Image (cartoon, rainbow, N blue to C red; front, side):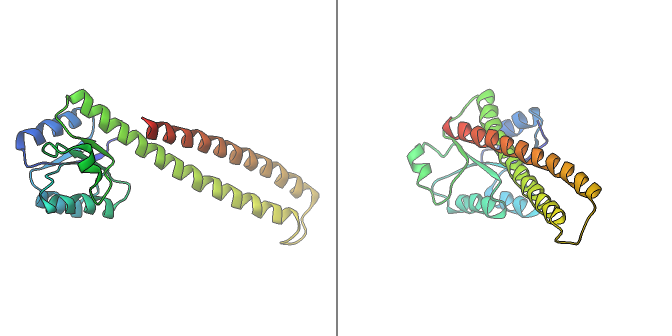
Length: 195
């Protein structure tokens, strides 16, 4: 697994260390902090791909941390932990959207599964975005070649036109491949949303 940057924030020192150890053991680069103020400072200093935070529903500062995570980078994954007996309905009524919730203690394999699923979804989104950018660039190049062939930049020889035609055919195949890949990615993201 790619070396993602992870921030674990909890007031429970033992819980925080266990989570940190489990994620480090899975190959992630983990920073562990033991209060919300330290977590906020850490977010200002470094970029994190994933933030796991134990949320106290009564503590407004906890909301600040989670909102700050998403504001700094909407791609940052936020997983809420514990929440002291809160129900899923309580969590879903919060003024921001977390990527996942673990409302009760869970085993290390279950924690790893939830984290892995979130990271896989993030990777699918990133690949999808790169593929869309590449496809757009290929379409722009294809358009330029068409303009060249049509003489918009001056007359060109038959030999050059034939070479441009071959290049454009190759580009069109790449565009089609990107469109197929985007369809697969869109289905993959939909499957993750269904789970």
